[in-house]
Image (tube, protein in one colour):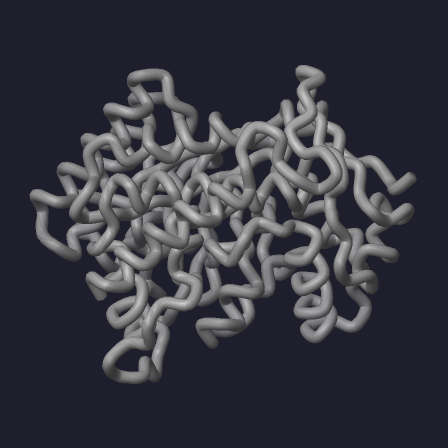
Length: 340
Ligand SMILES: [Zn+2]
């Protein structure tokens, strides 16, 4: 029998990116982080419709559960299908059996009217009892007025703001622009180029930062709490932890995997009930930071929610048919690619 751990938490995800894998290459090869946003992600998100949002969330949630991840903090953007989008994601996750915190990434990149619709979607979803935060894309795509409105809405609703912060150099003044707004319940994603301290928890996404060549966030150099995320590259938290460890170690050879494990632990502040879930892995030392740091291929065999319901058995989801989810997601991916 393998080791048993609590359910894992992904501290920053973009479930919609489940459909992005295998997408056609952009017409021009991106040469910087901003060009990656412009030529990959901002062409993709504007093409999303409700069916694509639903099946990307179904696939992303199913894959998360199969890795023992029972809580996801998601950040969503679909400029052509804003209204109701957070409920589609929440419903898909509920169907699969994964907990989710949703946020719509408010932005002025298509104008103030779109920012208002994004704010309205956060408000609609949260006031209806949805679990989540007020989302903001990033300071560098928002006017000061929009940032202030998002912060005010979050305060009104008693939730934090989930926002990308200084991921690339274009957003390096995020600290000064957000300083008067940020609070302890904010989730600050990346903070690679943050030039002054901000209140909130840092969501660290080492694989994504390496993939976008934005630099190392060095989260241990800041006093904030840190939670580990994937930024949309799946939700295999043991895999992300292994990568986070070697990247930390490259920065500081005295570091131990216990630091990375404390980042996984921080996820329970957002999803305390995931501590009551039980994940049995196919490896008898999956509960040891040092073992996991050097053991690829660890998979969840059984996932049992705190309620007693088994949602993964023999490595497969019990509530949905994996082959059907994959087939439907592939159909939606084909529709999405045809629009790019
Ligand atoms: Zn992100």
